Image (cartoon, rainbow, N blue to C red; front, side, top):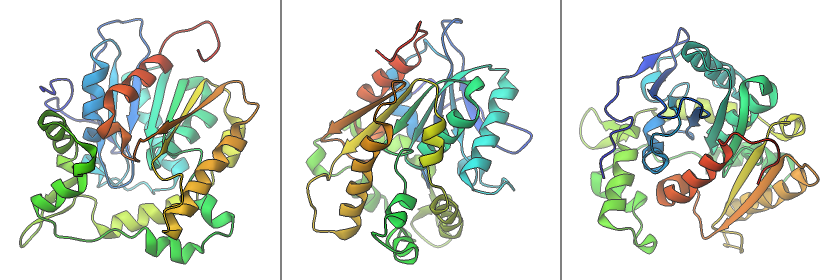
Length: 304
């Protein structure tokens, strides 16, 4: 599959230092789509979804603060700060409104953006995040912040290419050779060569933990109350049954709580995708793209 949309295009950089790639729209009346990746990833993470979306809409894929080509940004990593920095991308491109899409940590950034900059938000899509965060687990008393921080500390590496393939291409997913190539191209910039041997994350363990600490400070509940734009929340139901692993069961409970948080909100549609894993944009890109394309439609009102 030829990722000709964004992976060969140059980066643009805002005055704040935020790097992004831009693919212009074929349909000039279409709604631009802004894609926000999760913790430790980078904008190319969305390449499989971008290919499925096609060229109808303008697509803006951002390397968020501290990640990818934005790793030298001096801005802090608090969700509200990252959200404000995303505004600089829209300003530079002179985009009045966009469909804001975020995955995991990026979904929290998307939620905050949509809640606080509704005039710049056509719609918002939260992919397995945003409505539920690690802070929800701590606030419920299910786990201490200190223990959760330890549980969420990633291995430092270095990693071999074989280890990365085993991690991102589990046999149980049954991915075709073409799908495997899609996934590995999408995460290529997530890693860089280590000083001695192997590969390490581009973000680095120290910056990863700094972003995580800021993420643990963010509770989404107040922003959920502020949402007035059309919103879609995608919940990947990969471990709703008890796993026997405490942290995963606690996370599943936090996901369940999202249902109650949005109950009665006519502008929010919550979807449970059974069988989907957390990195659903990598493995079910066509389905994710269809949801995004639906959210980015110009409509007279309503979600359907």
